[in-house]
Image (tube, rainbow, N blue to C red):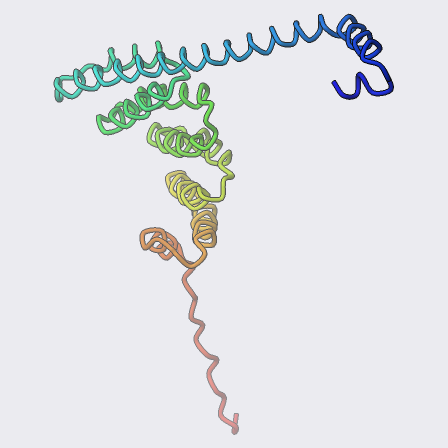
Length: 226
């Protein structure tokens, strides 16, 4: 406001200047204020809606888990799958999908595990979780004999913290394919990524594929007389 009245000597001139400025800019100020208030209200409404949605999902997830666990070995995955489908994009649906995939693997239902992990990878919006999903999906594909898909998924993992497991898993897949050279190279890459903190199992996997040194018998010494 100081900038508006600078250069005007009398109060009357200052008032006229303020009136003119308001005439030129007042409407935009009102619109801006309305937009600002609407945005603030909208953000609060969004926050309240998300909070309510999360609370509802949390309650439903707890109920599904209770029913799932109560049935023991007779449990059905139908309710869990329905919950996941109805809450896609929600963190509780992500947890449910990971849990269902794990249970499916333990039950030997790799097809169900693959479906859950594939759908989760496609819908997940939390990038740091992707390497975990990809590792599990690759292992499931390997169990299903789809080695190319497993390797393709593992090749997508570039996060430094997951390179050891990714390369170790590649080695295991290559072994299943009978590709010893690639398996050895992958295990070695995993060891290199370990930076001195090598997992004993990984070291054993690499040692089992170590190239045996061929001992060449020394040439016989010839007698000087010969």
